Every structure is written in C-alpha cells, then in structure tokens.
Amino acid sequence: MGTDLLLLPSVAAVIRNDKSEILFQYPRDSEYWSLPAGAIEPGESPAEAIVREVWEETGLSVVPIRIIGVFGGKGFRHTYANGDQVEYQVTVYDCKVVSGFLVAMDRESEILKYFNEDNLPKLALPYPEKVFKSNLERGC
Image (tube, rainbow, N blue to C red):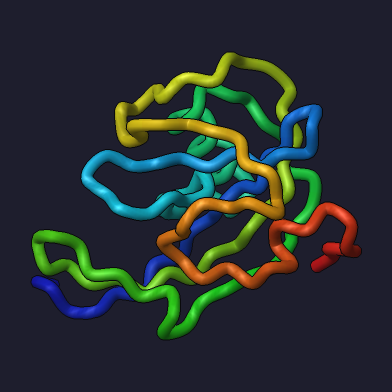
C-alpha cells in the first residue's frame, strides 16, 4: 500500500477521574496530546477495541458506557514520520474504570495525565468540544 491514504477505523476513550477530569496521553515523539485510542483490529468490535486499547495504553480496565459520537473527515488525517497517511474514523466512548492502576503498559505514552475540561491540552485530532463537556447530554 506504500504511503497511500488509508481510512482507519479506530476508537478513543473519554475516561474521567473522581474530580471529573479527563485522562489524556502524551505519546512519545509527538507534540500533541490524545485520548487513549487506537485502531480496531480485524475481527474485533469497536467496544472490544476500546477495552483492549485502554488497557494497553493505561493499565486501566474499563467498561464502555455509551458512544459519545463518531468523527472523521479531513481534519482527522495524519501523516506519520515515515510518510504513511491515515484518515481516522473514530468512535469515541464514554468509559468507566473498573480496575487497574494508571501506567503506560505498551510504552507508547510518555505521560498519562488528567486535565480539567476547561483547560485541555493541545490535541492531535480536532474533536468537537461537546466530547469533553460533562454537563451535556452525550447520546449516540
């Protein structure tokens, strides 16, 4: 496939702590933060993928509570340092932590940190503001 643009089905998690702050990760070799996220593997449902990705990236076991939204388009394109191009189609889940300890399990993340929804870090993808608002109705 070379470096041709690929559409990549993926998932991302909004995980809140007891202060209603949102968990973000700062990947190694990046200048932007992101939600815990990743690609859906062949044969895997989006709900299964979010549970796996969150565990791999954060050490937390989660249960997806609801879909906040599905996002994509030109704003969700990314070119990696090796020239690979992707356009993410991201299903964002509101997730509840059920167990685990916050630790970068797969060494993808340099930093894992909770942020207040009114003071979010600079993000790699342009999620709409409603994704991060706890006081809004966030159905499918």
